[in-house]
Image 1 (cartoon, each protein chain N blue to C red):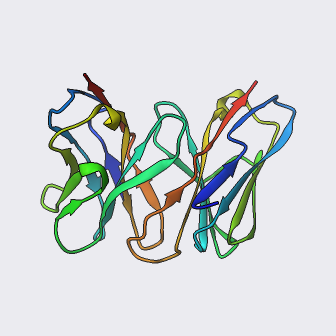
Image 2 (cartoon, rainbow over the protein chains, first blue to last red; image 1 turned 90 degrees about the vertical axis):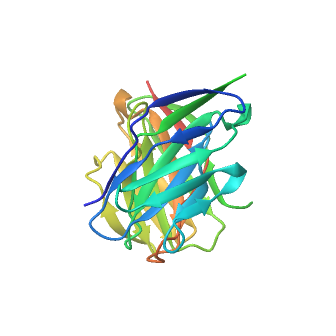
Length: 112
Length: 114
């Protein structure tokens, strides 16, 4: 069975500060891990993904995430956020059967 | 058109109406999905289609009826819905069984049931 936990439902942060959005997963097989971003009344856009290889994955808009097998985590980070990063972020775990399990989302609120 | 498109973007319907949501993908994928996104709940997978064949129905009520005439088009037919069915309905597509391939999402249809 697979599942995803996003511990923080909301994360407020000031502009230009660093941010980390937490994601923990449960998977009985090697996981494929994804981070998506959603703006209001829009679909989900892929930020980055981990399949195999290097555990530090870089994505679009300056975001990166690190796969940590021992801690079953895939936290998303950005060293300096912008107002335009305000959105909801979803972590997901996928399997070989194309089934995705999404977390409940984290709303990032970047303040000026 | 590029990516995944959905129409209409907004829909208001009464409980006795019949309506349909349309999804089209221009990515050459062979798998398509319907998700329901309600406030304060994780995305709920509703249906999965692989090469036009339904491979998953996640215990969705029969008032939701999917149709996949080809690998590029996906419909969700709605009838006698309930107010609790109000949500954002998202369509997605991907390559089937391509390990690690992401799903590409459309912009969604915001459905309000009165």
